[in-house]
Image (tube, rainbow, N blue to C red; front, side, top):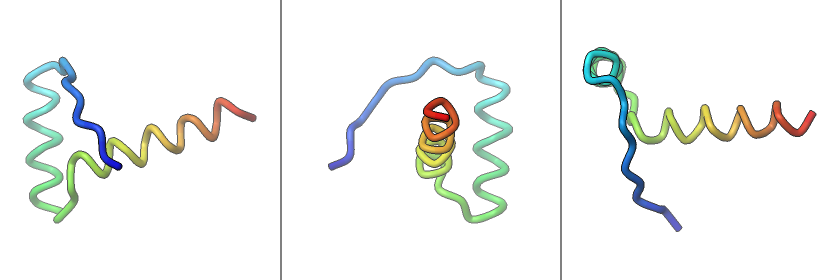
Length: 45
C-alpha cells in the first residue's frame, strides 16, 4: 500500500531534482523511496 506524505524541501533543490528525473525517465517519488530503503538497510548494520 502506498502512503501519501507531505515534505518540505528547498524549492531550488526540488526543481533541479525534478528536472533531472524528467530528463532521465525516473519517477521522483520512487527514487526517494529507494533512497529511504537503502538508508534503512545501512542503519541496521
